[in-house]
Length: 293
Image 1 (cartoon, rainbow, N blue to C red):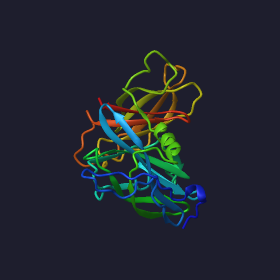
Image 2 (tube, rainbow, N blue to C red):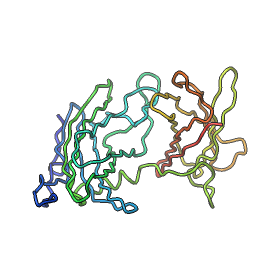
Image 3 (cartoon, one colour):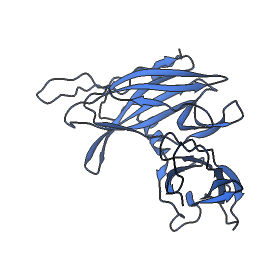
Image 4 (cartoon, rainbow, N blue to C red):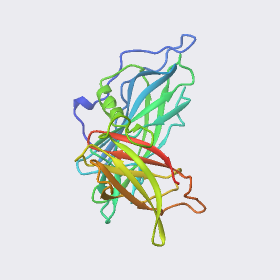
């Protein structure tokens, strides 16, 4: 079990929410208790409400903390690994929950490949739509995830949090995680600038007996970037795009990546398939959807 200092102990919000009809609810909290495994622990943290286009969204986060040197996985793990699973079906007064994914990193998987994920600590921001905005919402999640040091082991947690609807002590962590969620931008050059992150073009070409996809990415000159690609559904297992240096026109900050069209599920057709591309730099990240030609 991981031990944490006083700054990570459970904190209670000093408020009580009232249901319709005047019946008091369970006391809202700013964070759930940590539920630990050997080398890892997880908890839920509550954030303030978010008014988005008239919709009353609640903010929360799922935090996973790892021992030094241990890793866990992104929603697409790369060459090997297991992505987290989140089951919110036990929640109360919750219509839907959307998990957001901060920009991940690449790391060696120990078997000659590369995986995509997180080190040390990660908070997955959550967007919760309540069934009834006038009543309190209670979030429950059954979390399954994998953690890797020299070996990989499965981990799980069953977490519960009555949402406070107010910013708590862990709000800075949640805000920082939200800031690292890739921005959704359209395919094509950056409008009005030539040094921002962008996926400029995506096209297929024949390479011997195989087809491959060529992706041109722009970034500030000299800035390292990683590119990840996902298929239209979870049963697609596309390879990691490989950097091929600058594009033929040698424009500043223009890079070319390629990957073979392998890992398609049986019966899948590449043409017109909607792929999701994520570009990550040390200070920025974007997400682009593009259909294959």
